[in-house]
Image (tube, rainbow, N blue to C red; front, side, top):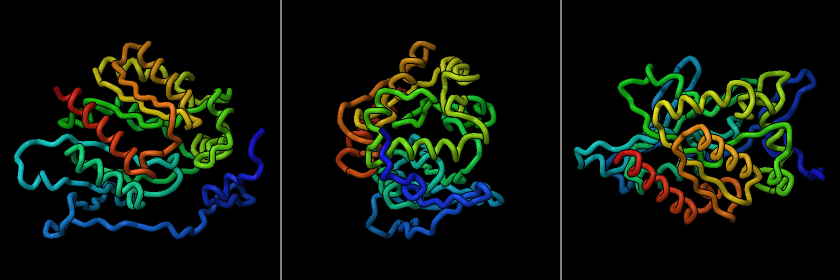
Length: 279
């Protein structure tokens, strides 16, 4: 049975209004400011850049200090922070700190996207959407896609969703609300934005194969999303996509964000993945 003590609106800091709209509570979420002063004793310089002024979207660029003394090109990692596309930002300390750690350890430039937070809007995995836009991105060349605990679902519950429905980090009722906020009005969780086995979702993996991208899929056994992630990796393999799988038994959702030691493990994996696809 679902954990009736968890209010998903309160968990996310939302109030549902009688007319169907939502109000975000003004939670006191700390913010880390960017710092690009090279005279400071910091391993990574950061700077905020506007992407679309009209939509008030921006990115935070993380430049490892090694870039200041080397002429070698560094890989670029486009980072989309967690939270189901409905809360937090690129300036949230835990995401800022993780990107600093990743830029420094992986010796890569990281662009953390502060996307528009969504309610009743459409989105699909940003990486898969990029397969449709590769020509417009030239001369930028995408070589791989990293899916860390990717958020997918469906109307039929998976075993891990039922087993971990009361997980304190991300209860099942909270994921249900996130999908309600993100999917088009009237759509259920078998919409292709949520369930890649539905609609035209599977066709996007044909494009992944055609482009030759490698995909890293990483998950943890105590995350209620893990069964969907394993199935996703298997589906891509069946479609001929070159997949690197990283699934471990322990660890909950977002473990690499909350624990620096787990971040080190995942960043080491990312560094190896970057080397593999660049070789």
